[in-house]
Length: 70
Image (cartoon, rainbow, N blue to C red; front, top):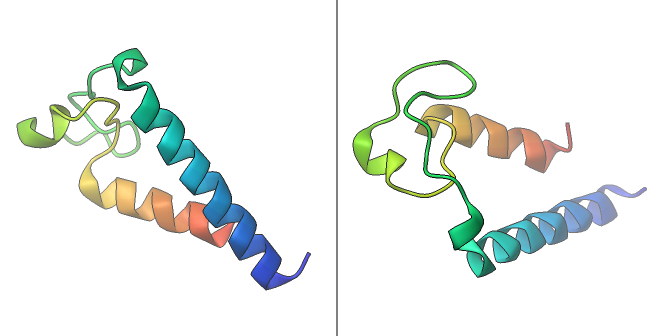
C-alpha cells in the first residue's frame, strides 16, 4: 500500500471513529480518574469529558501512534 493511501485510510478511520462517538455520546462511560497508560491522575476538568481514559500527554502520544499506523 502506498504511503498516501495508508495516510488517507488512517484519516478516514479516525473521522469515522470521531463521528460514531459524536452521534452516541450517551453510550460512553464517564472519564477515568487515572490515565489507563501511565496511571497519573487526570485533571477534573478533563475527566468531565465523557470517554476520557488518558491524560493529555498519553492521549497525544496515542494519537501520534495511530497516525503512524503502529
